[in-house]
Image (tube, rainbow, N blue to C red; front, side, top):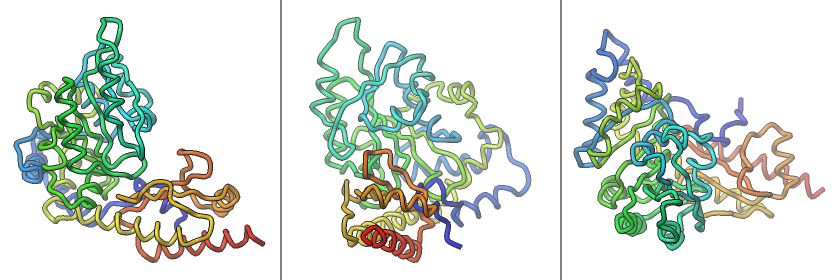
Length: 348
């Protein structure tokens, strides 16, 4: 039976085999609590190998906690965080960044295709320096962006240089960071600490894990007492090995990047087939696992009436379709056939 939720979000996908296997293996016997277990140590070491550096790693339950706690560690209450106007930390965290930082202000900047405009960032920092203005302290990027586009290594390096010159700490919301790595085919280090990133929130849930994100500090000083933040926020898992095991299992099996690469390829296939239908066009370049298209409003209504679930939060006539590790070419073919059938009905 076809599941009509399959393109709504990569959060709808199940647990991938490598993550499931690691969970099963971690479920034998006993393990020390609160992260002092072999699986957590193994996952942290696997991430250090992955990034080719001695980073500090913490595991939390979800992306909201990862982002808000990471940003809170960079700022004080009178500081501000600069991010794109579509950034998840602004639009979808229910004020968690402000809450956990005791009121740090979020300042928005524009930018084409979901990427921050560097001139706007500079202007936001330099337009005022008086005591009445919330002092900019952090720049937060989303990689891949909220519209599925990517910052290249060169773009990241330019942003890292700008952030350093302006005295900003650089945070990356990497809910789909694996998709960016797979698409750009670059070493994780090149897209993170070598480009000036101070802290990365690395997403696992959208890439085949059941739950859990990694907060990766490339600057050890910024991680000071982060474990206390996690505990206070209810993010210190007692059975931490079950958050960490999927990371170890997927990294060691190579599934982290394989899953992301598969999701990206399914998105490209979906985009190619959808835009072959008259009246459907791309809104943003397909660079990772998201497909943003412009659909006639009657077709959007027809798809919803037929039971298909997808999001239209980016504007009138725009729709987002997400692919995941679990998406198949057959799924794409079935959905595109449905879109074409309903589009043809609109013309009768």
